[in-house]
Length: 302
Image (cartoon, rainbow, N blue to C red; front, side, top):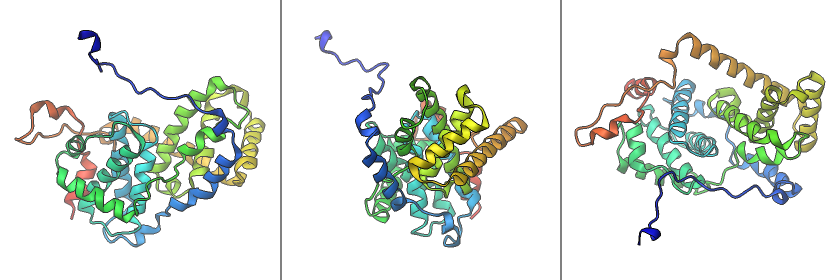
């Protein structure tokens, strides 16, 4: 009987290798480029929202990224969560006291869409420092799905990374590193107000250029980088100046983030205080990161 036991300690997600036939099929990339604007929302909704301001979005979205990183979620989960959040905020008015609840529900849905083992509802409640309940989370999950018309297959910059990378003159041994760094840049773009308004293909192309500039020595000269940008232009029809501008903004945001973290790490957005444990919770639950102070201040400033 012991031989039949299923031991799950050290379990890791097993992934199928990338299908080169699909990635290199021109129809796949063409369909992505055609459909990307279907679920893309401009951030002009701040004129529509009465209480939500741009800095509040940045605070909550950064908190979402922290939760995704702490829970080792798939790279695709975070940008899909932000897509849901922006689409919801563009459709319905949300009180700032409910912003974290809406964001949490968006993360709950996105994790179900992209992972075989989504984040547990109770765990998400703990990450909010118990400022919401499981019942509220489930109610808002259904409401958000109705607002989105159950259309949750949104295209994000991650969908473009592999199809674009296989079409670039980059050695395959660099691909994993480039993908990892590009994912980081995509997350940065989702947080930044200006970059979040760009289309997924522009963000993906610019993130690849920014990654390759810093990692691949054979493309270190301006001429080689220019050739790379023109190659991306021929693949996606994105204007080369758009790509250059976006790459510059990514590098500026990256530089500012490094400067901010070195100047005052104690007030960093990603710093989370030790959560208080409700009387009906076990003490072992208190080790989870909780709602950052900045998010709490938004909720309490009503």
